[in-house]
Length: 543
Image (cartoon, rainbow, N blue to C red; front, side, top):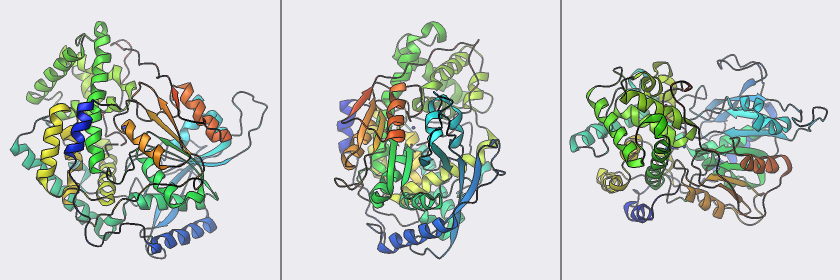
């Protein structure tokens, strides 16, 4: 799920008619985890507990500071065969500091390890321990070892690739919101080729990159860390396999934070979730344009959202004819503003780049939206893992006419991301590996310790109804909502109310007695040419 809301009632109603039933699962695809895989997880966890993790210097991780250590943990490629082929997952750790930031003389007792996953599928958490030096995280870092890791397929953890990275970042490129039939045929051919590439490069291993295996890997990591019960924080996609973990291993859970929750309803995984995401991004795109319009004195792009849209479309048309720097076409422009839909910290930079381009200076737009060849291998690896996990996880429509019908209708009311999301996921229509039936995420009363769910009300990457659904399915969970905001991933950000709930839960086990809400975070301040900072290219955001 183009994983980081509220959308119009019309859009919501339309989606209920658009989401055609996905194709039936391939023959032999299991509907539930089989006993052999559950036994295999227990075998692998016992082995990992005995072996532990030999942490040392992070020699293979560039720019990792000395206070962070790295190691590996072995997990079975196939949990039905726990003594068969093993793969190694890379793990990072910053030990608990024991330092109370509000009282330097007080030594804080260690509570265990806090394992974090940033989402994806395909994102690495190896650099998560670095947050321990930030003010918003120091209290948590005092009590917990901060643990990051690269899930299977990601980075150096049995890396997956489906295409030559040199051929992956194609730029400049078009991004028609109402594609022609010839353009659709071109993209279908690309999707088929990508799916074939995944099968050719991964071989028989391809079927084992799944959310269920990510959940099983998490239990092996827990055991390798010497933790009898898991303390975990997952963001975006990390909430989904975290919820699978809670369903499979409820007695192994100590505390869990679900930040920006994916809708875990099996009927939504993953085709329908992507339709809902495309609809939600239309509302988020309007939020961005309204903010830019409020600062027309800085950017000069129009004083209404509609006028800002006209400025954006003017830039798209120019880039279609003459790409900026030979690198930035309409697709790169759209990608830059899509990342702003995930994180509102990007709004000032993106608005400045658009304004400068229309005034004759393309450099800021090239810096922010242009491809970075040095990141091609990482971007292709991320995309390969994303594709493999989502395609393996669930049935998808295999008839192009279903995709075409649903997204043609949706694009009439939500043109900003709809077709881009189609091309991202279309290899799943032609996927060569067996499909699974999604696990029914659900826990009964008293089966799972209380858990914390965080959600921004206008998050488009994981629309708000996903948090409501997860809350209904995890007995004893409590939902905290950041009202009126749409940033994707809200823990450890600038909202002290949200952070207070996270700290109270992780440090003391305290939760509100019922649903709680926080006022929205402050909107970003506009930046002009004098103070705008360079930001990375609009790489594929976490999903």
